[in-house]
Image (cartoon, rainbow over all chains, first blue to last red):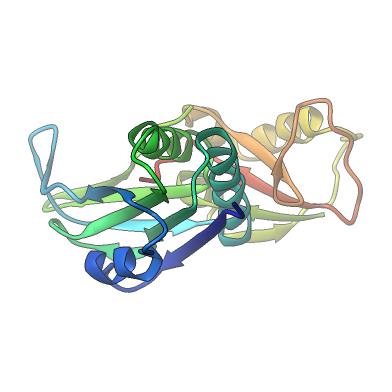
Length: 141
Length: 79
């Protein structure tokens, strides 16, 4: 099996049906999707939108490294990680991860590993914009 | 050295990219961080600050070359 990673920082809304269809294959019976959706509130404040910024070449490298690691560890057929950059509104997907393999074993673990690692090391930053101000989210480390 | 700056660190420094002329004898990542924090004290208010050299996270001991592309990485918050 020769795993392929599909990595993208996307300025436009993510179409989940389109992304899952893009890597669906009759060879792979298991497909696991994680969608991270923008919330409309944070600690009692109303979030009007998020501004995502990335160090793009390094983010792509890090995402590719994580995808390769997950592919090897969980024997995946395909890995897709698309992350929004720019302005993203509540209800929109900020990130979509899709992993596939012939069987379902380990696909859930693979999805969790990818999102956990992504949050720790990938150089992407989120600014929350509220009705009365804005702040950079300083999540990890 | 070219230094790229992102997120909260960019707002501290006031620009996304600048040329750093060493003011002392900064030879390592750790020494550069120290020199930058003297020049831009607001950097100390960040929860953390990592440094990437040529698009990879670098340790404090990593030696710097004048052709390196440095990036200041405040705490990340993707996903």
